[in-house]
Every structure is written in C-alpha cells, then in structure tokens.
Length: 95
Length: 416
Image 1 (cartoon, each protein chain N blue to C red):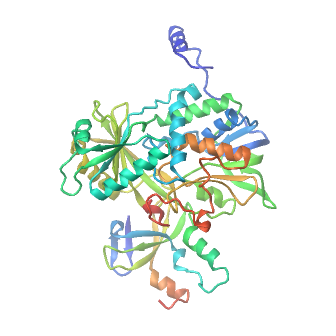
Image 2 (image 1 turned 30 degrees about the horizontal axis):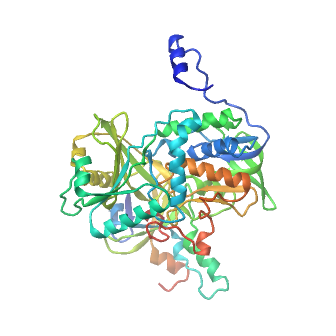
Image 3 (image 1 turned 90 degrees about the vertical axis):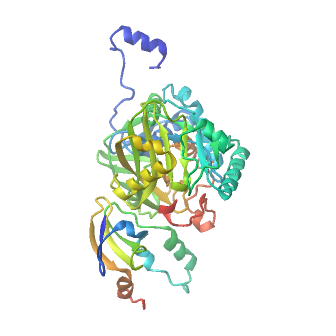
C-alpha cells in the first residue's frame, strides 16, 4: 500500500505504524461524571466496518507525524490522507 | 450411515454406488429453538455438542456461503494447549483432550496427528519464561517438556543453531500437540450434527436481527425471517459486521493474516516448529507441502488477501531458522480474516440482548480451540451459565479489570 503523505508525498505503508480507528483522537473529558464508562468505550470498543474506515497511522520511519487515513477495508484503497493535527484542530483541540 | 473399513471394501467391490451425501440440504423452517449463525468449525461444533451432549432439539446452523468456507479452511491446522494464564490453559487443554477423542466421537477421519510442537528458546530470559509456562501447563493437566540444545539437535538437525542474533539454546515441547486435517473437522462436525437432526442451511445470509424490547426474536435472512428462542453467533472474522446489525460495538478489530504452502516435498519435518522471536512457524502436511505463517499484516482488513512486505518478512523468518526452506518454491499463499480482540483472548458470552449469544474474538488461535469452543458455547446456549473451562471469556472483562493478556501487550489488537 502507498500512503500519499500530505507533506512528503507517496510513501510505502511499511514506513508506518498502525493504530486503528481514528476515534482515538477524541479523548473523553476526564472531568465527566461517567468518566469510567467513557474511557472504557474509548480504550476498548472500536468501529470495525467492512468498508470505509478512518484510521490513525504513525510515520515512524519518516517525519514522525500522525496521519488520519481514510481507507476501504475490503479493497485496501485509500481515498483521503490528512494530518491528524489538522483533524484534531478542526474539532476544536488546541494541538 | 456409519463409516467403517468393511463399508469401504464393500463399496469398492460394488463400484462405489452406495455412498450417500454426508448431510441433508433442508429448507429453513419458520422457527427453531436455537439458531447458530456461522457454518464454520465453531458453529458446526456447537451444533454437534448441543444435539449430542446437551440433548437439545430443533437446531439450525445458518451459513451465508458453503460450510467450512471461512477460517476453518484457511488456517495452518495446528493444535496445542501451551498457554500460561489460568483463564486460558484449562480451556485449551480441554480442547486438546476433545481433539484426542474427536474421530471416535464423530466416526470421521479428521487425520488428527499428534506429531508434537516445539517452541524454540534463544536466551536465558526466554528460557525462564518458557519453563514457567511449561510448569503452568503441567499444573493444568497438560504435558510439557523442556529440551536442551543437544536434544533439539537430535530431533531437528537442520535448524540454524548458531545464528548470531537468535542461536537456539533449547525448546519447550508439547508432544500431544500436532496437526489436524482442517476441512475434515468442518465436514465431520457437519455430518454428525446433521445425523442428530440439526438443519444445516447453506447459502443463507443473515441481513438483520429482530429485536423487540431487548429480546432477540429471530433473524432476517436472504431466505426470509427465521424465528428463534436463542441465537448464537460464531462468525469470527466478521463478528464486527454481524453484531453491528444488533447495534453492538465490540472490543474487536478485523485483521488479515497470511499463510503459505510450499511445493510438495518428501518427509523432512517431523513436527511443528515455532520460532517466536522471528514470528515464524512451520509444519509439513501429509501431502508434503511445508505449511507456514507469521505475523498479521497489521491493519484492519476484510480483503482475505495481504500485501507483499509481510510475505517477505515471513520468508525471512523461515530462512533465519530453517535455511533449507530456501530450496523449496512457494506454491500457494492466502489470507484469512481474524477477530483480533483487545487482550488477545476470545469471548464466549451472553450479550446485553436477551436470547442473543456471542462467540468470537479468536485472534489467530481459533482452529485449535474448535472443539472446546463448540462444547462450551453449547453449554452456555443450553444452560445459560458458562462452562467451567470458559468462565473467564466475558465481554465485560475490560470494565471489571479481568483481562487475559498472554503477551502483556495491552489494548493494541494488531500486536496480539
């Protein structure tokens, strides 16, 4: 698989480490009343579709940036690659 | 119809005209007491033990394609019970005991071959860990044997003992481990279940569940609605998709694992070798092919095919430990889809929906577990309580802090 890195261009997926479901960006509020329940779901329950999945890849063998890759789990076709930083900021996170 | 040597001779003399199909092809009835989704090894084993051991009636197995067409036909056929933790070892030892009696139980030749499995040791730390594991196995009634380098040289003289990075210093052997003809497991269970009155319904895809007020009333399928008092799901690889239809998110990711077969060779490899440090394992099938595998590709996939970097990695592992493998040509390779759970251990449990039961999360150890998985899932379906060897496989164990993490990797499914 070739991942089209937004900054570095096309890179071999073997340079990356895989972290799965991109919902891991959305860490629950630690001050919430249902914090135990929320962190259980955050840490252990995953979206696992046969189809389009947004997922985290870490460019360990490159510039060490985190990417959000949109990929079809049936064909391995990649339709979109974003910097995880940009995705987090678009959700109102500071970094 | 029972199979026997006498029957084979009789049929040979009469032109083989008396053989009948090994199971029926019934149409689905409008309602069953118990419906099992998934006509693979685990689903068919569940049906067999439900009917034969737990004396349940009115059972159906629903399969979207043909039976035995999923992971039971795509694995590397190894059986063993060399686990460390209390939640796992009694279960896998129960499974190995069931394998030992399987062919008599089913009246079917599954080619169970207890040729032994050997985990190789390369360092003092690894020796300590394997000796500890061997002791845990013996405490749970399994067999385990520590071998030093000289003993392994005698049995496997062709391994690379003097590798710079991973010199072979010993091994943990389980003599009762071995291999089984995987397709015959599915067919044997199917034939036995059918003879006990179970309806095996192929080419029938589940499209949804009928759930009213938190109670599962049956399933919607491509061949119409089928009512059921209890529904058991055993579709590992596709658990996320199926349980998603019931509105559940699972502690599971689906990953692709590749396996490989070389061209046929004369007998060269007496048992099963595992090279854990390089993540490579190999055995030789009765047809002569070297059957081997290694790591997951490492990303979520339903594609049943992997990519080339892992092919290279697995073959490097083979060359590192068993250099003569470089003389054999690769004949076939394929991929299967694994339910990778968050702690590397499976689930056999009720769900929060009444009448809906779940069996999955087998990571890449599902084949060896087939008999015990079926037996304990049948126990759960029949009695609503877990079997004594499967009490730890709860879906809520991350909430209660009772993970069963053999490798201590944490909630990173592609590392288990």
